Length: 473
Image 1 (cartoon, helix red, strand yellow):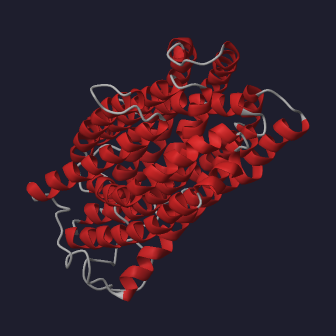
Image 2: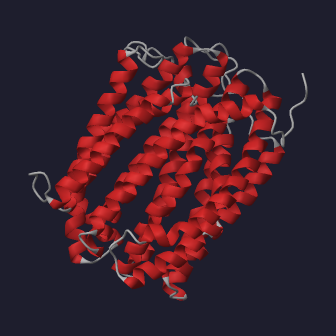
Image 3: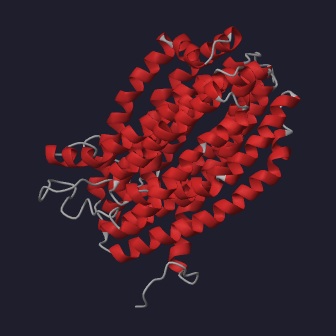
């Protein structure tokens, strides 16, 4: 057997597996972000105030979604390694733990959306019209949190056992319906009432319910690997839970603290007024559309690495990690150029003033110039470190970068230098540089690779050791 090389374009097994795992995830994210952009264009028809209101109100959802991603991304580390080991019983137990944590966590987020929506809005902005519209949006969208908890657990864990298509099918159908209902309920088409931003929230709630129903129907109807009974999702020992929690807690803390840190950028942008928050929201949507192409690469990289570690093929895992970074950086550079070229076209769909469009155009160049770094950091944190069991280091660089670099730079740009929004964004992007430097250093140190499941199975823990998690295949 020939020795694998990092720059080996003839290793068909790597690229075929990358496409098989990553393509459905990529398509799912492109669909989601593409329709999110369409939603924002529709909301934009109501004016700058509506765009800002929905963007700010969604910050609570943003934190919650990243909490769900933290729980299930951390759990997927065990899934990938358990799948490489061939232990389906353990994967179902991991699903059970993840599902319980997500459902319990949805309760406080729901209560905040119902009892404290005004406080959430006023933290970010003082404009009365923005606050009122945001409050009405939050009170409706909050009802979707429990549904999202169920969907996230099954969708992410499905990838860990090679079932990447069911989440894609569920999302495609639900998000298509979401777009139709958005148009109908925002403007009152096809005999439905014109509800404005409340119509957008109602459409999203209905789509979330449909997405969960379709996903569960596929999994249980076809009796796929995650069609687990309640008893199969229970019955884990204290040692199993302890070893599960040890690597997963840093991932959960990572996602929550990172989400709060990134949301603080909106706090500073809000100090500059509605125009800046609208610019930031439009750029967040447009950048998400282009960047979403790489979530499939990060997910596939993580699954492949986790599987190899679980199968005790550490040398292959190391090569795959480095190869994914090289591939990602090159593709990120190409996508950054595409974003810069396509920005005027995409911005033409938004019904906003010329000043906002001008700021967005320059901000797009800022995002384009850092795209390659963002892709490297995504692969390192989500793909390499987490699925290699190096969750503490991943959490440190992912959290400290915004809190120690990004937020101080935002404060400097807004409060001291009083720069326009696009220059503040350029300062904030310095966090990506810092994160990439430490991430690459960790990659070549080799310390990120840890086998979490070598002595752990679906029943009892054979011998105390590290923890384990489920990955996406």
